[in-house]
Amino acid sequence: MMMLKLAFRNILRNRRRTLLTVLSMAGGYLLVSVQLSVTEGSYDQVLDFYTRDTTGHVQVTVDGFVETPTLYKAFSLTDDLQQAIDALPGVQATAPRIESSALGYGDTRSFPVSVRGVDPEREAALSYLADKVSAGRYLSSEPDDQGYAGVMIGAQVARQLALDVGDELILVSQGADGSLANDLYRVQGIVGQPGDVEERWVVMPLAAAQSFFVLPGEVHRLVILGADYRSAPRLAERIGEMLPGQELTASSWQTVAREFHETMTADKEGGMITLYVIVFLVCIGVLNTVLMSVLERTGEFGVLKAIGTSPARLFWLIVLETLLLAVIACLLGGLIALPINLWFTLQGIALAEPMEISGIVFSHYRGQMSAYVFGFPMLVILIAAALIALMPAFRAARIVPVDAMRTL
Amino acid sequence: MSSVIETRDVSKHYGEGDTLVKALDRVSLGIAPGEFTAIVGPSGSGKSTLLQLMGGLDNPTHGQVHLANKDITQMSGRELSDFRRDHIGFIFQAYNLIPVLTAAENCEYIMLLQGVPEAERRERVYAMLERVGLAGREGRFPHQLSGGQQQRVAVARAMVSRPNIILADEPTANLDSQTGSDLLDMMHDLNRNEGMTFVFSTHDPMIMERASRLIRLKDGCIDSESEREA
Image (tube, rainbow over all chains, first blue to last red; front, top):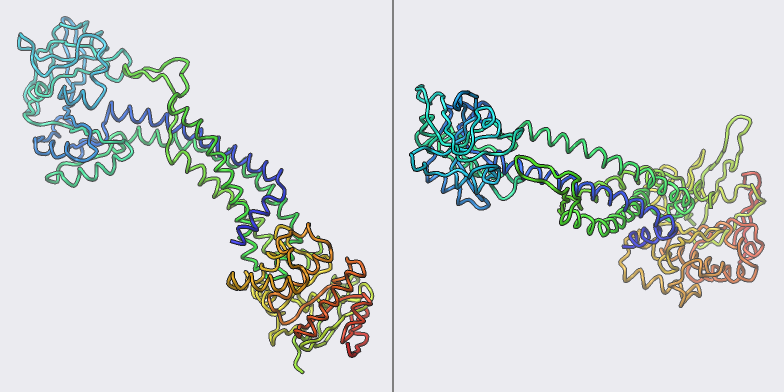
């Protein structure tokens, strides 16, 4: 307690210098925290959107399908399994998917398409597919009054095959049993805009896709949406434990979209370099302060050693003083960062041009309020402060009392 | 009588070759318990250097210093710190109190290092400050005290941890004669009544008058020694 008192009073000796040091460290904390909040908020938006729209948080597939998807790697999805996964805590939605390719025909043209078979209701609850309908209407499980299954087509498919809502689309492909698959469908809606990821899609009800590809009762993926994309690996682990047999596997979105995940991680780490540069610049200033403070008190350290203070205790006194400065700075920085990060989270910065991805509009850069945004800068600054203090503390601990006291 | 502190052939040299300065040259002496000894001599005679070596604040170029039957010249920095803390009290010419600690905290500090329980620390500090005439000023910081009062705090700090010996380097040099005389009377009383051993480095006649033993240094060597009834 006495050492803490001594450290605290020491940092209050030169109040102006302490204030400037605290302000510089608090400024560093503030910059790091706000930048982290905005960066994390943006990544959060992107990843939340991406996983919800594309991969879900976890997928159950036949082992190897994620790496090399083929028509033949399908599995029988039982109601029991789906209900068991639906009942897991944190699971928001599940949706089965079939994916393969086909050749689409309009009146006079053909065009290669990517066929997606989905459960319309479950898919609407899981992904943004229902929000991306740019013309016509969303998919229906029921065939129309003429017995045709309805499909939604991507904008590029519509343009290449000169199709519109209400027109007929013929698909030709290969069935899982080796037969020639072909059928006629009614265009019920157009999905997205040219240039979107869905531009080559033909989306049809799951039952129609199972019939077309001769996959009765089978699916390629069971997509699962959990509570949070961050906890996907844990959810995948839990689902993996309940899968029957050896051939099925549960993969988190980080595995399913490995390349995307690695790109995002690399981008994020690149952004961290800026933060470390900020901390480094702050550290230079703080190092100067600590060195000055130690230099000024060399004689006093000599006295402290003369009357019995051990080198280790003197070392920790300097480290403690620097850490106290850092803690005060972080608290001050945190107080200032709190309303700023809150504003970024609730309000955000409006983009000059709203960004549209597959029909979903991003209009604001948003921040994030999390323990990480406030805790990480504190941790970095405390570690940096401790490292800064090492050299001056080591010097103070090694002084010879009689030499040091000559400076008094 | 066995010595509290003993120097054996202690030398302290600075520089080398043509620039070699022998601050102390083969000095051997012993200080008996309860002595009130003054090491005197002109400036540069080596009296402060001798005191520093006796207190383990510096290492001799040659020779040994024995305190409490241990050769302190062979100790590591950590061992020396602990040894000074437990066995030696220092009084410096410039008081050298810790400016951010109060009078009581300055005295308490060494006992804190010694691991003395808080209640006992408080009791001993208040008793000692009363003993040196500073009752009621326990909570004052050094800058709120006069030079004489600061030196009294330094005496209290040196004594409160109950060391074997107190080494005082020119303790009256920064004080006016009346304050210096009062302080010396106080230390002399402590010496006579409590048997505390004092060694001074000084050229103050007031200390020499009170000293039971005078050791005169000249050019780093003992020039003469005299004992008298103090």
